Amino acid sequence: MLIAALDSTAVTASACIAEIDSGRVKTFSLFTVKNKLTHSEILLPLLENALEQYGADVDDIQLFAVSAGPGSFTGVRIGASTVKGLAFAKGKPCVAVSALEAMAKNVGRGVVCPVMDARRDQFYTAIFKDGVRLLDDCALSVEEIKAKLSDYPDVTVCGDGMEKLLSLCGDCENLFPASFSSADQNALSVAVCGYEAFARGEAVSGKDLRPIYLRMPQAERERLEREKK
Image 1 (cartoon, helix red, strand yellow):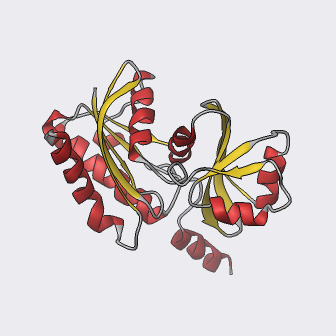
Image 2: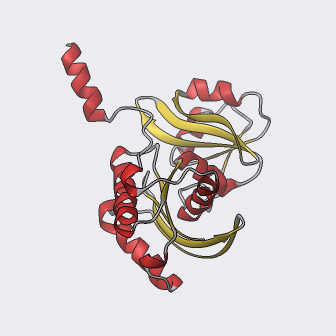
């Protein structure tokens, strides 16, 4: 199955074309950028480069996968809307993948805790062990995360919130940073998670694809706060 995958949920933007057969990645083309450019400007060019270098056309894609959240509200919307438009235009299925699950897939085995800075003294997080989910995607405080991880002797932390969390957990000797090559978003992992979701029957049409939000957008929260006052 030829899959096009995107991730724009945080600072990193990533696009990948991957052929996956029986759960194994056979070939792929991957482009990832982490800089100050906005995702709205570079996400489609990244996908076009991935297609060109792979030697494929968008019509060859059999499944579109997107890291649909949690994460930056703007980044999540950009990635989800891009895949919605492509899948709808081409009449192809698509899947929404958890950004946290995809990042955990980068690390692989062991206990993995992906974290994304959710602001307001919280992190978006989840827990996985050897690829099996132990904690659903949620928004937790530092103290809540420390309590969730206290029973595990060795935990690999990854994600854009990794350095901030580790700096706040200096007394936790069981937490370790992921390597630089596996700490950030990676669209190849999104493709793998997308393949697995497709195999579970979770594919939808472009019209039905929905972002994954764990909290209301800041503008909506501020509006409700003003109304309460």
